[in-house]
Image 1 (cartoon, helix red, strand yellow):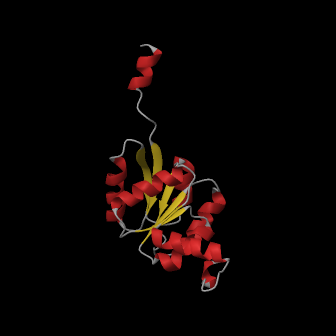
Image 2: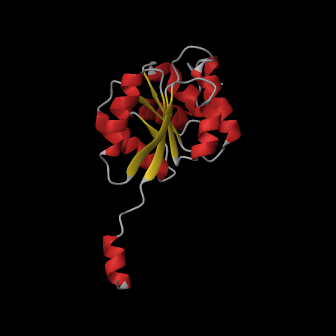
Length: 163
């Protein structure tokens, strides 16, 4: 095989995604969505228990999708623990929790992106790809609020729980 034909037949490397969500149906739906993409592949999943760190260490995914609403330790605490174990892993929070309350808090805790579960499925794919390019991703509503706060230099109205 010539080098040119090898390059043509070689499939693009699929980026490995690890899912953490308490609800099996959400993990299943996300797996189906992600695995249809030529550049993404779900490499593992967890339900939010303490085995997440061990699984991440073993599988070494390229990106993590994390729900912060589950029983046991609060998801923000789990996010902080994961971030302290791996400061470079892109983390996308996918949550039912109101983004106006939790998005900035999740970003301050180490997330690289935050989207709501009720957003369109394509939003997950857009967010994953942005994070894999080392960009941040938040919904338009939060992005606009953060821009306004940045421009005004104000943190007025910012809940202390974000810190």
